[in-house]
Figure 1: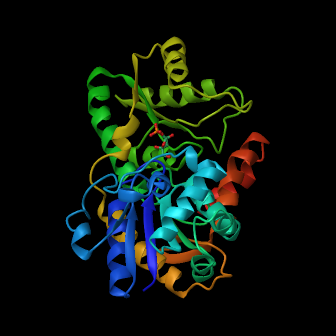
Figure 2: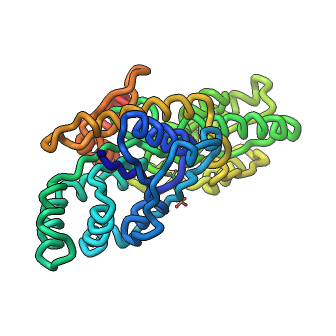
Length: 363
Ligand code: F6P
């Protein structure tokens, strides 16, 4: 039978468990054998108990749970060829030559690297006598499929990544909660949200939470933005608004590329407007808790497609990543999606904001 390995890598995201469950059960239904690789790529490097065969029941009662029950890790060893050599050896010990990775763009880049290096790594293992020529001939290629697990929603080409919807719910709920205490004291709150280089969570939370101002990485504000922000908040107060909320994406910068810190925004509001201002950095609560209904069903559909991608791919198929476009599951070219995603911060640095936004708009 075909043997598929599944792992979660990078920052955890709500819905990863739903995807793991779907991969395991879709694979078993299709007659494949499926192995969980524990603690991300590290499980492959460690081998032994780090790779565990999964049954239908092993993924029972995890659909609604946050995080990832098979563990995740940002493995430094996997970035070294020596680490990847060990990993391939351990995969071959189990006869695994198909991999599904649920992670962000960094984890998916690593996956593609493993695919391209596979034949060379096999030669090296045969040369050093660690695997037989026959084993190498039985598994000439690594076939891969990626699923994007990241609350940041930063993959260009896909509408939503696994976890983004749940994280957005957390942020909007926090803004609602902050609004009532802000209104009671007529205070201003600066709310800092995650997202790395991507402003999706900040922008959507600002819209859904009715914030007064938002700062996102894709549109660094032109000089003088402090005055414009103050004018906006002043107008709100004059119109009788009792709470003021400014949402700051953690990756927001000015046009020179200097980070815009939440504390700086607080100082501006305090000094220029005389506002009693507090900063709330939401942090990892955004990544916690149960996945939303969306993150459960979307991850389930994507897991199914990832398995079928692996079962239908030919050795010369490019690696694919499973995304969502217009509410439909799509199989995208993995390296194009990763390249475009990594291009956005470059465009921003070069001041090509419209192009950066257009790329984001395609997602
Ligand atoms: O990529 C997900 C993310 O939560 C980002 O939004 C954030 O910048 C980063 O991971 C935090 O990483 P860590 O969990 O390692 O602190």
